[in-house]
Length: 200
Image 1 (cartoon, rainbow, N blue to C red):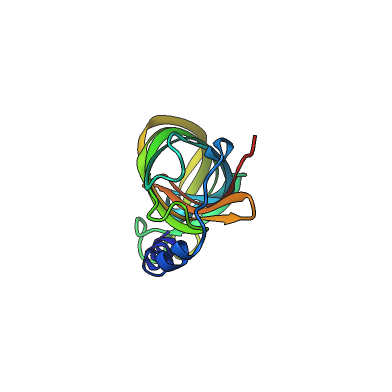
Image 2: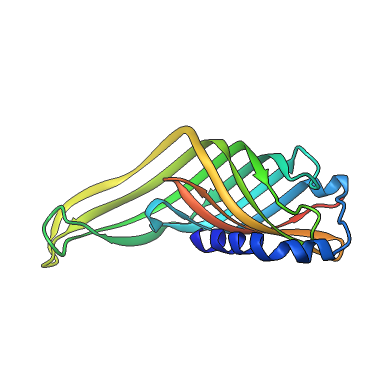
């Protein structure tokens, strides 16, 4: 996320001339609907999975400030993980396995400094309703390898609201619009996705 934010910032410094050098790029009505997919990680990077998202722009893409609606889904296969823990002394770890799925629906605002350029950075912020499902188990292991405490397999579900922040690059290749975006639901998940506008 930090890397893409840095890239987006640098682009805001060097792309104005490039954007002005290009002929104006006007979007079609069908350009407002984007489908995106890419890898994602849960809080703490414990589980890695696939994120897919449909996003509709409520305002024309030629505007600097816009609004979007999105529906996203995130799923991970069952996988094992290990993380350091000081609960049972230095060198102890928590070993576990788990699976997770998220569904989020929200509205965001976007700022695109040069919306008609062939390449333009943008930033997004907003809020989403989030529903999470989790399944897993684990145990604490001491530094000497002995088990300290274990937890039986279990599942949980949780709903609520979360912030949405992201930064990305929008590119026009031929007659198609593409976007590369790093997105975070702070404290919940982070994703990197590549998307394209649907033409209809």
